Image (tube, rainbow, N blue to C red; front, top):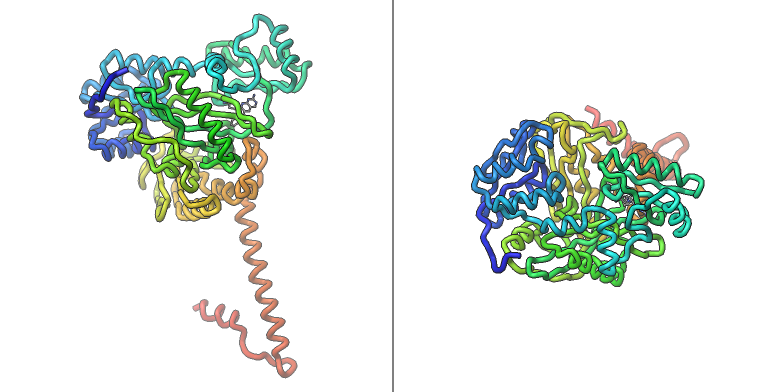
Length: 505
Ligand code: MV4
């Protein structure tokens, strides 16, 4: 690792959308010029407009543009960029790309390739973590020579079990097996699925945890090996392995559990020689046992909630660490509460189908302690070829109830016309009793599906309003009757009628 510090004079952002914009902002705060890259689908994208320079890297398909080592490194050379920030997704966790940057003499703003290798494959990561004394979900770490041996192992740890592809992640190729009789066919199906999806038929198995919580710990390390944690994020509000709402602190963590998980996450990062921003994911079961799941060796989508409660700029910190500077912060208790929601160009009523198209009108939320990380602008056309996330709204407040109220306020300010978004769905989540009560696990969004879609919230709101109006009118009528001095005569015109008449001109 480099000793001392080395300046970064120009950063190429190998990404698009809101995260490219986010990185450009921190670079500008630090006085570092930026280079955007874009595919033909992103010629007029916001990140291209905001960067100091922009280079075309190819046609719309990611494989030929945002995933092309050669074209990206060519753009870096042509622009004179001496560092690359990968954002999330795309090449952010690609060890071969990190090595290609090194070979080209370009600083990769992220962890070393060796740390990515150590955490990339799930069984290898599990074995590395067990060796480091990090609790992992009970299960196997190596492929079995035969289905018989796999079955015997499943019987030993007890059903139900979870079959997982060693080369997978993010929920792909997962299979729950309820009973012994189902094991052999499930095992073979998982193997062929894994081979198809990841070109690797290695499957391993874990004890099945029933509707766990997903709680992750943000870690940060400098090149000298100083490693700290920056508390947790509760990410159990997921649908089809996509996070929808994230918050910190987690409603289920005690300070003791936070300290224990933080200490384990730091141990995990140190065990693989981690540098920069990383996230250690845990599953938490109903007894509040926590187990290592995987490590994300990148900056994450949901980093803003951590920024809100720590006061740090995590992107600027990544750049400082990449320059060889020491960490300028320590672990501290979270200050207040933060929530983030992901705004997607999708239609919840059409099974969340992407809804690309032209944004004809846009009003984004603002005001005290509200942040909108957006990759779009009025008049922009959301392309069909990439992820349909158009922005992230995050809020801060002193307490969780106030943060929920503030997020509801922020979402009520958000107006997007021309495309369909999930904003109403997000609003319904923020109003759901299980979310408001802090009683939600990874089963929450599937369980609440119809309640969240059914315009339930809205319809009930209207009915409640009508009921209140009727009730007020009837009470007023009773009072008027009791005040009527002579039968058949009114005490005077009802203020309700007056108001109605006056407003109808
Ligand atoms: C599990 C599990 C229950 N038991 N493993 C899904 C994503 C992948 N990274 C791991 N996942 C799970 N692994 C065992 N042994 C349940 C899930 C899971 C889940 C985990 C985190 C967040 C959301 C989830 C939704 C469904 C299932």
